[in-house]
Amino acid sequence: MIFNMPGFESIFPGQADMNDTILRHDWRIEEIEALLDLPFNDLLFRAQTLHRAHFDPNQVQVSSLLSIKTGACSEDCGYCSQSAKYNTDVEPERLLPVGEVIEAASAAKAKGASRFCMGAAWRNPTDKNLERVIEMVEAVHGMGMETCITLGMLTEAQAQRLSEAGLDYYNHNLDTSPEFYGEVITTRTFEDRLDTLAHVRNAGINVCSGGILGMGESRRDRARMLQELANLPRHPESVPINMLVPVEGTPLYDAEGIDHLEFIRTIAVARLLMPESYVRLSAGRAEMSDEAQALCFLAGANSIFYGERLLTTDNPETDADRQLFNRLGLTMEASVESMVKAAKGSCRKSA
Ligand code: SAM
Ligand code: DTB
Ligand code: SF4
Image (cartoon, rainbow, N blue to C red; front, side, top):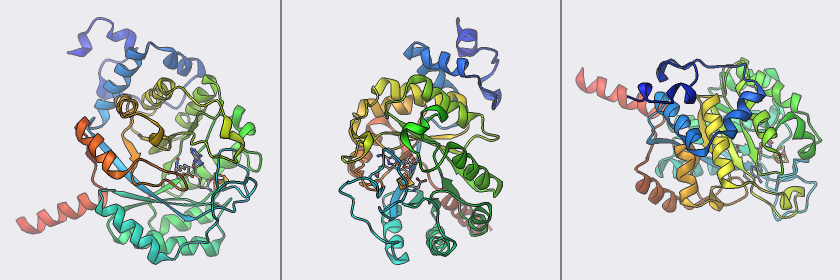
């Protein structure tokens, strides 16, 4: 019984039982830095133990991603291939027709994805564009998949409209610490991002928010970003942790990057601060070894982007991911919609 184990109190201070975790929103930066400083084995043990108290450790939530409007974006995010300010290889494309989105979503569903995420290279959507995206959301929802979109900043009314349309998740990342933020983006503020997250939360849509590691930030910046996420009034239901995909032509192409063990540590701390959130091992998997990914899952990551493409860059091949899942004994989590459908089916059978 691990609760009687020598040293338990030092690894889980003040915690008698793993099942009674209190969701905290008052994390101090020193506490988070102390977690990041733990010996690697202690940190991973602690993160995995807490993870098991809240999730099936062998199940991973799987989302597929599609860029529904690509490039020519007015923002200057220093990591992004889609900013009009930088000279990258990305070919701008207008908003896709609904038919193409349905095709991509059904292919993703056939491969086992339970959620379909649609991304648009906008600073914010116009009301007219929002209605076109809502058509897509309704179509994907009708296929029995969970829906997620990321369109930039939203007004309160737009978030409300999306909620009425039945959107499941809105992705809007804090990206980095408030202190490092100005080194990465100048065309909108950290506060703007918090405002959009508040609109999404108040509209009753699930929040998906995380950031990017490996942009030349310090460990303190990583701790500050996690602190901002964990100290939101409610933890985001989904926390994507991206490793920078360096894109030629962007200012961050030559950024220092991040050691993979440090990346894994940050995932473990995200798990410890937000025990009930899905932590998504997001961009950057194509550059990671299977072993590094396995350690991310051990650290408490339990969601991935699945499919050969992210938005404009490559993700691992689906066959490679399936093999990795087999080797690790991981299974893909079914969508809430498909579980409801299955339950309805078995009720009908037994009636
Ligand atoms: N335009 C919208 C916005 O910025 O909110 C939505 C799309 S944007 C591409 C979504 C997120 O993808 C960004 O906030 C960032 O965290 C992540 N991202 C973009 N380019 C990336 C890259 N090269 N490497 C890692 N993550 C990246
Ligand atoms: C998130 O946190 N990561 C995804 C999704 N949200 C929209 C995007 C990753 C983009 C990686 C670079 C690209 O493919 O352009
Ligand atoms: Fe535009 Fe989003 Fe890329 Fe920033 S991250 S440049 S807002 S597409």
